[in-house]
Image (cartoon, rainbow, N blue to C red; front, side):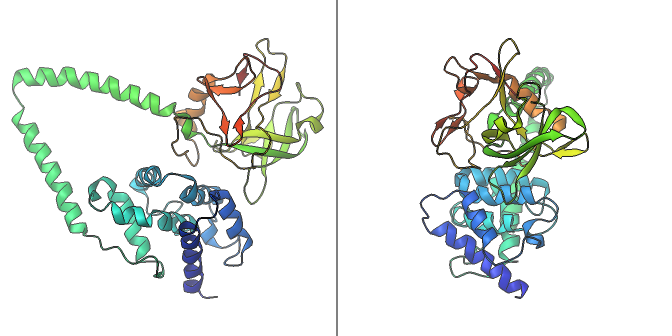
Length: 354
């Protein structure tokens, strides 16, 4: 099959799944459907040879996220990038392109606000084969540049007019307040729970780490094409590895770390009793699909593909994890929520979660 034909089939596949109501299937379901069909092999660079998990993440967002939120997230992500993942086209670009097509058509009256998305969108529509459902969207980038320059010039003129000594003092005071305010905003943003990719997982196997007496090595299904390897320090509290098998809650976008020679690709969330003597896995209610994202009502943003460890985002969010008197897992009092209800632990009340 020629490359052009492959791209055409991928565009048609994504367009078909975008336009047709498939009983609200999640992005994970559609990813699995694509993985099973014969359009391209898993070794194809379009699947993301460098960072396949980031490709899957953005692919699924085309269906999992509200389009306005997706538009904002994509625009921010593309501020210094050509493609969503890596340095070349992937199926993540194709899925999000088809998912945002109708939104981009309708938002051209506000082009300056989404210049990075429009630049990327125009690149894709001139790269991918044309589809009868996706006619080319005409974009006037000259107008974009003029609008941006005019705004900048207006801002510069206004600034020049405010140069009296009294105003300088006010500006200095205001600047100090703004710096403090921006610091607070950054802190709040870093503590936004929606930046974590927390999912329902299923522990398929667990065994002792060959080189660490306190660690287990688990294989966990989190709704992806293959299971993730996870190392967890639960041996002291759960001596029998068979007790770990089953459903759990997993943080999936921490940067992988090597623990005694084995790369750990996620973190299982567990509750610890107030006296530190008991540990229990946080578990979803029955009937929840593996790979479903755990949500927190009122905080519906898009998770980072991979958390930047230098910013210590997880470390700022985790201290607010706790269990209630009803054994419900919460963040700042908001339940870990799935489509079938809240996540819970077996018996620990008033415990911490990590």
